[in-house]
Length: 396
Ligand code: PMP
Image 1 (cartoon, helix red, strand yellow):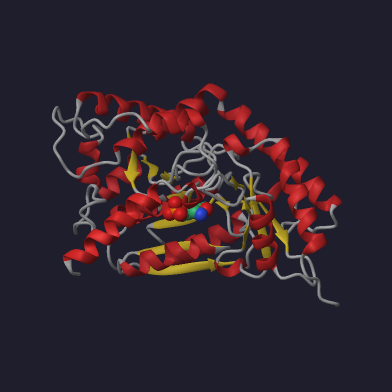
Image 2: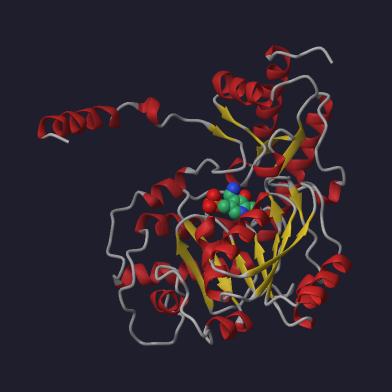
């Protein structure tokens, strides 16, 4: 690029930075990211300090404690990966699985598909248990598959955000122990919104993201490993494929390896950590049980209202509906894209269509953390009611 062109690009950037329409206020009522409350925005806006400063290590220690509370675990090996939920997903797989090892992945929406894809890329021998979106796996089905495939790791999504399903968790960790495999769980779309007990439910590796019920900006991803997982990942024959996500380094960066000195590994997202600390503090102040209760109450209120509009919920069994992300069967005769576009244009509100295997099946509404209130549920109902009146409906 010539010097003249570079100058003109820079001048245009400075101009655009002042134009609010590039970052407008929106109701973020899709499956995430959620709106970030002022307290977390303010924390993220604090002046930058060094990623290796003493104060930063204190903040990281607070984050570790906050994650331990949110996950209900005492695991020492608890960190926040630098990146989105996918980073934690890859961190878990890259460290705990070696090439050629058998891995069993439960697929009932996009997240199992994604994990299977990542595991294949690292050369794992991937076996799958598959249901259509909205389906779930019984403990008998899981046990049969564990006995058949003898995997080193079993993956399950707790809150399947593409299908709107919260998976029952009791007993699965015990089955994994019985069959000598690690239990890896994705709680990106459920943490803080649906009950989950890492230690009591014998989950060996658990991860989440910052941008859903935690209401942080996207970009940090809590992940925790128990002693079983540590034993496996620290006795590998091969090095993990990723240097950035190698837990031998990250455990030192997070002060989890017992060594007196922390050595530079990568520059962590300082502002993201400030924000994450505040997110976790807010969750701890509110209390997990209150947060779970609130999400359930608001989801039920929303579900009643949606049925009042003549809409059908995608997940039939009330107990399997994920309180954080509600899936609505696309109303007959409507084009889902027109509905989401209408709601964005006329109500400044994000709701989305499906994802992966649920595309064309569902609309998705997420009311998480700070966004989780009956007032916001009413806003969704008004916007959807309006869309149903004004969007094109074909004769069926
Ligand atoms: N797992 C689940 C259940 C999710 O809902 C998401 C995000 N939609 C992810 C993983 C991936 O997270 P991220 O987009 O932050 O990488």
